[in-house]
Image (cartoon, rainbow over all chains, first blue to last red; front, side):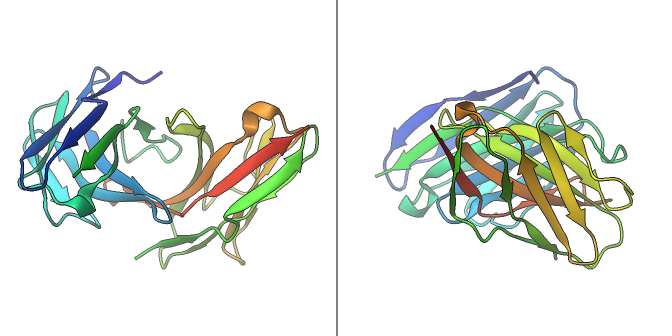
Length: 115
Length: 115
């Protein structure tokens, strides 16, 4: 299994509080991604990173920021959490975009509830 | 922009029977890849099978095969000899080459295998 650890695995917090989710990988993969999973929507890309300090927005980036100061860590921050950000968050990693069949591998997810 | 459509929210299949999960896609690119992931009730995302847009043969991985019809833009997953452990959500996803390996997912199909 790909070495991807997400923390925390579960979190309950209140509207308006800041929240940071961490994704840690031991695979030394260049590409890292944050998705959110909601019923009826599948997984949607929030932000991704293509190297240390190199990040870009995905489909649903409003209200989220990311940082990647080391290859192994990719942080997702909700500056001021809202109830609409209650979701399951998945981190994924990818070795290369130049090897067509190489899949993204996913962490086990973080269940975030914002009350 | 690319899009994945999975029109079957839920499917039932009897144990030992084969089942086909539908996936159609929309993309303007000539080079792309199609992925299927399985998400059991425990929540993790498990990569199952990959099909490249230029692959001439349908992909197979054990009991999983992909019925790829490029002209119809469909990439249906076929599971042969269903097992109780196949009960899960199944997601189809597309990746366009050169876009940092980002995936666009469908909304998923929940498969229930019965005795």
